[in-house]
Image (cartoon, rainbow, N blue to C red; front, side):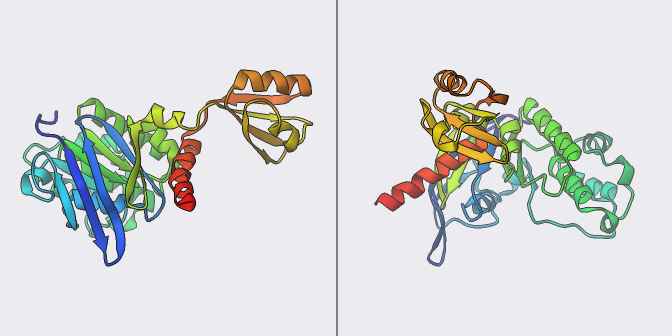
Length: 304
């Protein structure tokens, strides 16, 4: 079990510039103990810079940040932190078992080696040379290294890149178990399905700013209403004229109707075309909410 202690991450007015480029713009962020927080954003939004500042790999230009009450990169903070970076590699000639054993020796109370090998499904290649492993297998080894130290805080930067669906879901299961154990997980990902499946809280970054920070259901609710998918003889123009319809998109034979009120829209749709078929109604996806959140500051800039 992780130890109790100070807030895992607390940042105030965090700014990082590279020449004239502002990578982080006065970011305020508090990450409480035991949450899975997903940090989302397009390329260049500032996600990786934020992670690097938290880890002490990059110094902020201004602002304050602490990890468990210590400066980023300080030894007491590092002992309580596990990291899986997006771009990482390991010495080719060691085996996964040797790598994990070595990493475990750096920590005072590491997890049990056989348990980690089992959790990360490494047994079939634990004694093969690292250089012979596939990209997905290497990512699983890197994930094992992030958790072997029994950390209170785990950073996972694009952890499932290159993984097949089955392995991705295995990793999701381990992440959930880490959180149940009281650990804090910071996840960056381009897979919105992943954020939706795992995160208690979502932070959206854009242009070096945090433009949204809320529990996942609240972020998803930003899109509002419902999405109706169906096949119909009605034209896109006719569908757009139905009550409470916000947008319509046609893909092949299907249409997707984004509506503010599914009941009124459905009544009018069925009245206009009683032969509607292949009908599916669902809540808006996290992707739709993300798109709307990111578009809002861009629209504001265009109006200014």
